[in-house]
Image (cartoon, rainbow, N blue to C red):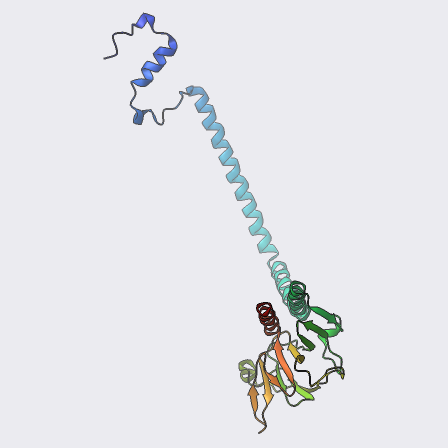
Length: 266
């Protein structure tokens, strides 16, 4: 029963609204919506149905056009897709060498800037993609107490291999016979002998002058010829025949370790 202190003829409209809403339990007041005129509701629902129907009709129309175009031009579409895929593969393959070389140079320049190393590029990017026949090196790097004279060993093929025969020559095999693909398809070795030479300016008695051959991009196998004529696997950082073999990653990591060692000594 409502309070006796509230008389119906004394309650204003605002108070009546407040009193009536207080009579509704809180959990029942959720979801109470404003009453809508039945005519307006019918018109609203009708327009909404028309809109949904139009959207559905447009979707069916577009699907029909797509199916018709695919049925009529399937050959053209397939040919276009194949052309795009082949072009993308060719571009990736053709640009592999400069992309890998640029990636390495960016990392090299970054570490040089961080540690104030002196980098002297003696052969520009595209010239460095070919093996240096003479005594020229691709770049000279003064890194702390070390001086590196670096020649790139470059291969267009991942399945290739480098075999270091002596101080003066190396064998480059375009498709390594030992690879699984070469074995399956019975590929024959296609090898050339590449001369190795370094500038006369290098002091061989200076333990901090490093003759380096940097393999970039990486190849499947890197070997050296043993004294008995056998082929022995080798890797980044290994010294042989008076020079040191590096991969791009191995060379950057070596510079970082030397830099940390020098900073700790200070």
